[in-house]
Length: 399
Image 1 (tube, rainbow, N blue to C red):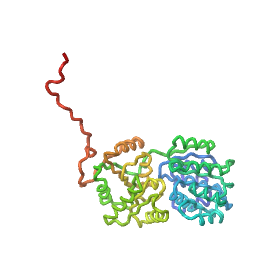
Image 2 (spheres, rainbow, N blue to C red):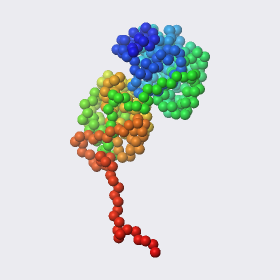
Image 3 (tube, helix red, strand yellow):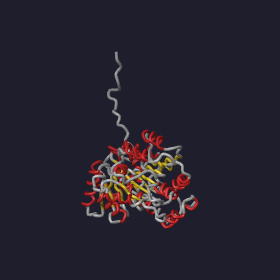
Image 4 (cartoon, one colour):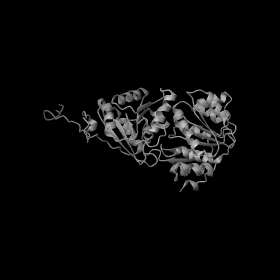
């Protein structure tokens, strides 16, 4: 099946051909015809499956240029909004339609100018979109397609009340709503029931790790976590590496540690870094200026970079779903990738949760010639309990 069999418009098909794609991914093949029919959709797929194109291509095919917002996409992070806007611009370049990108952390002036110049597509974070509405720059009357992306992440970040307000501002009559969420906790289910009408559900291997990714746990003593990380980087023939940490402070510490070894092509990315520097780090990683990007989980779902050869988890993720999202940064578009997760004794419960979530036992590996300090995690078989010998022929009978 090719893209030309799905019912997409000629200008969109021309842009797809120029991008070098000829075969849709499973979620694209399923979602595109349903969206073109005008039905509401609940979509769930693992990272790296082509979800953005799955909603961008049919949405662009359904509207004609009028110079007023017709497609509205809500994203939880600035980075993700930026990347989705780029996708709409790439696939819509032959339609004549303009895209406005709205997010916080930068001045409002240029973003309002974008809206006033006449746009058909708006990609925004919730807070900044509401700011533009209050300043009478954003109007919702012509919205035909509302796309709510990464809804569970928006819930995590406290955006759901704002998103609910935005949904209410959009026309209810004749509006198509596309709803994408990696997980569906009760609050999300209730919200979906409220804003969708007879939705079609699409799920593509939400819990599975892509078959193109080779992944393993690397057990080590707690005191050797940093040493093993540096050894993995030294012994690995990588093209580009994403290292995930739990906290912003940890990301900075790991970045500085790697720099201290003489590796200068490394950058950190987390919410404490100002927006300009975050965009420079992302652009530099995409261009190859930086070979290593150290990021928190905000970036795990908020970055779409092709060609990442390796992912390293500095710690086992506390949330099992984040394991799939993190290591899904590599092995994309049928390319092969490797993911290493450093495992210490205090993280065994998290490791077990990950294995239950992905429904597979994850291999434990050792790095050859690494000077391991002993830890029970390195034993090939679990230790047997030591039983005390009975003394004096056993327990005496009571008289």
